[in-house]
Amino acid sequence: MSTFDPDTFMQTSTDQSMDTEYPVMPEDEYQAFINKVIARKFVDKETGEDRGILDVLFEVSSDKAKKATGQDTPIAKMGVFLELEENGALALGMGKNVKLGKLREAAKQNKPGKPWSPPMLEGAGPFIIKVVIDIREEGTYNKVVRVAAAK
Image (cartoon, rainbow, N blue to C red; front, side, top):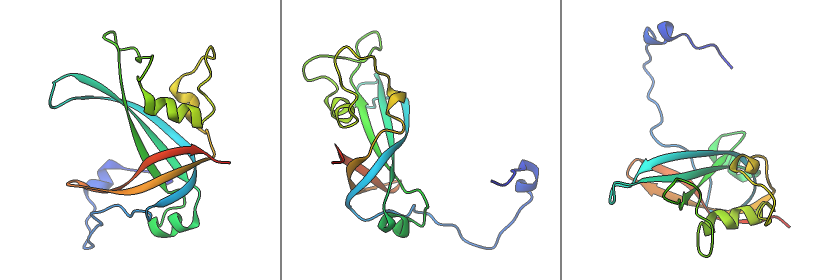
């Protein structure tokens, strides 16, 4: 990795244009591992309430994805909206956090009585993930819509 010098950067000029869209991999099923999980908070625009999301970044193991994105390590993201109790704890019980439960099950980390925390997902896999192209006002992205344990 190169060394970044803010002063040099501020004096740099270029006559080349830059990409305005991230390259995406084709919609398909891919083998993948979880590269990173990131918990973040946002304010729900409709209710004004604080909400939680767990962003799950999958490293895709596919030459087709590598070629399409030009990346050695193509990444596809799944956002898991978290259902929380009033005190901010993860809501548990019937019908609560089902998407997170399905992810934990695919990672073989959904056993009753066994302690679990989100960072335990990092490095988990292999999975078979379904990737679609998500077109939004701010750009086009790859989005994971289904996760299953690889056989």
